[in-house]
Image 1 (tube, one colour):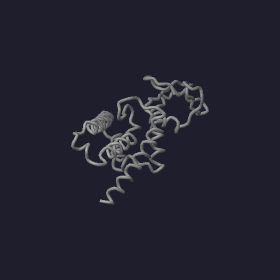
Image 2 (tube, rainbow, N blue to C red):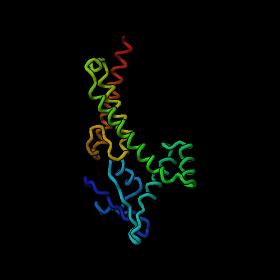
Image 3 (tube, rainbow, N blue to C red):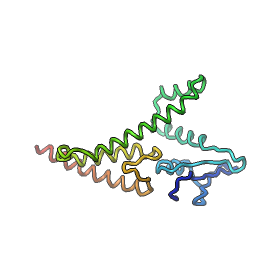
Image 4 (spheres, helix red, strand yellow):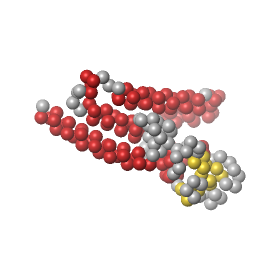
Length: 185
């Protein structure tokens, strides 16, 4: 996958197969979801009509994630979304949602930044560094799917997932070690 700021162009053929124009191979919705989690924007175009199908496919990805039990959207939020389509509120909902996600990304970036600028008194607390790393890994895992967010403000890569997994294993080992030390006290 090429590192670029322009969206990854996916063409949908009449057979409904999705074609990645950068790698010249067919992709699935799971592949597209993976590209997005890595911070890549995608654009899905119908080859015959030229229609932009991106929204339709993104909604399908969200619906499939929700059906798999990975619920992010509470029922009351889904109800409010449905209501917004039947009322005159539809004009402010997209702006509200975009602003909300922007604020979430900003606040989590600031939280990670603040964790790295901790006063020396906190840094001297046993296990603080392990706890800070664990929180960073947690934030990376929940915000890794949000476009443009990384703890270190760099573009995510495919190896970021494997390094995050290794980092998580290391943090778990450190946490287990800390728990042993605490139980001895």
